[in-house]
Length: 434
Image (cartoon, rainbow, N blue to C red; front, side, top):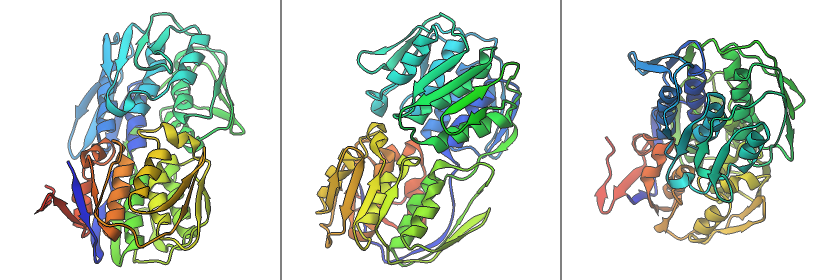
């Protein structure tokens, strides 16, 4: 569906932010590895639903209680199904590959859409070095991934950390299942390290301690087992809050965002608060709410997004309206997300007349308004590009192709956007989300 976003005069209102996709996925996966867990207010996005279904595939029982509360009881004795389908969730795919090996294999992991072509080579090669039979699509070990029945052994493991932190998280989740002491050494230029920390924190809540040495060595001692998460409330998603905060920063606005902000469960996309502050945005934040009153005169600058590549799209939109040149650096790994978040993003922004250049791991953006209006922008099936383009539409008016791809992380995005005052249209008719 093509969604037309018209320029908005102001944004006003109150919005309850959605739950963290990343913590929802980790909660369901870890809950399936041992013990009993109660997961409170997880995300209802496509990827979180797939994680919940994957918990079932891993043998757990999963029951909805009330008010979006879920009871999960692990049963690691159940055999894996012959096929597990993860739709478009790269996180679930990567987590599942070594977990399936440790659980005895004999399964095939399939996916669809944007997951096709996403590489798993570093993870698959590491597992083969540990004795596993893992075979993915020729060239990059992509989907479908076939898992044989050969066991893997604990020990001293090395993996390249320059492409995706999901590989490291996947191995850390698996090591406690192997029975012996293990060490994990990361090589290369480590990216998205905060996501690894998120995984370690959820493991700790289930009784598994991971020791670290610096940012490149991890140790998991034998004798540990997953004991369940107890009662786990999923915090609000900082990365999804970023789109609404950016919109409020660009327009006359008076908005309150409510949610659960847990300092004990930090998020990689929590960097957005510091990034916005550096750009000149002011807001007040507590454990229960964020208040913002815009607009603000934005400042460009040099911003490293090494640990938060999901912020590349919305930071690029903000840069279009900032004073001075903006450089988004250390973002080479953003090329292997749901889209190439460097080249694809640049290609679309050029349509509105933006001054955008790219290097291997940078985007350089100079404000070049007035921008062309009502352009049709293609998010390349990338949910974060789609939401960033919708925010852009509030300033200049755009049409966003395939807006339904936002279901991957934020199925209620059009509704919530409309709640704050966005004028949305499908064709000539006003779009009023249910």
